[in-house]
Image (cartoon, rainbow, N blue to C red; front, side, top):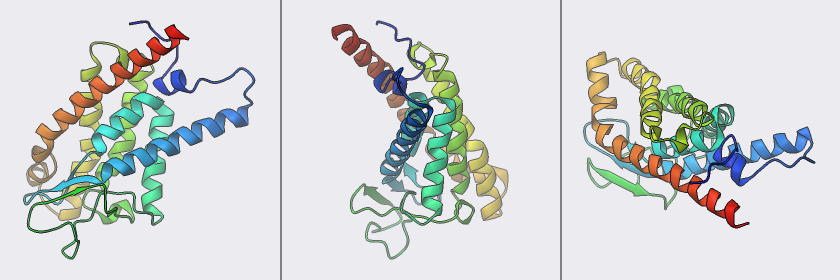
Length: 224
C-alpha cells in the first residue's frame, strides 16, 4: 500500500491548503470534530438493552475508535467533548434511555436501530453510564495519539484499539460503582463482562475500517 505522509486520515481526505488562514484551519477542524460527534450520536442509536446491566450495548465504541484514529489526539478528544456537551445541553445525543414507557421496550430485552430517534440527554453524572461518556474522550485521545504515529496503518492497529477500548472502562466502571453504590466486583459484572464479546467485534470492525480507508486514499491519490 502506498503510504501517505498525512498525519491522520482526516488530513489525507481533507488536506490543509497552503493558502488557508489560521481561522480557516480552525473552522475546518471544528467542522470535522462536530461531524464526527454527530457520527457518534448516530451510532449511539444502535443500542441493545440486556436484563443484567443498566448500561446498554451500543455502536458508540466503534464510532469512538474511528473518530480518534481519523482525527488524531486533540481533535479526537475534542470531538468526543463536543458529543458530551451536545447531550448535556439537552439535545438527544446519548444512547436511548429504554425507559419503561419507551416504544422500543417490549420486555427485559430491548433493541433500537436508529429510527425512531430515541436519544437521551442530560448531565453525564445523572446516568449510571455517564462515566463511559467521559471515557470516550480518553479513548479517542489515546487512539488519536497512536494514529498520529501511524498505528492505524500498521499490523498492531488491533492492539492500539484494544488500549482505547480498555481505557474508557476506567471512568465508566468507577462511576457505575459509585452511582449504583455497589462493589467493584458488582460494577465489573454490570459494566464490563457483558460487553467483552461485543467490544471485541467492534474493535475488529474498526481495525479493518481504518486500513481499508487508508488504502482507498492511497489508491485515489495514486490515480490523481
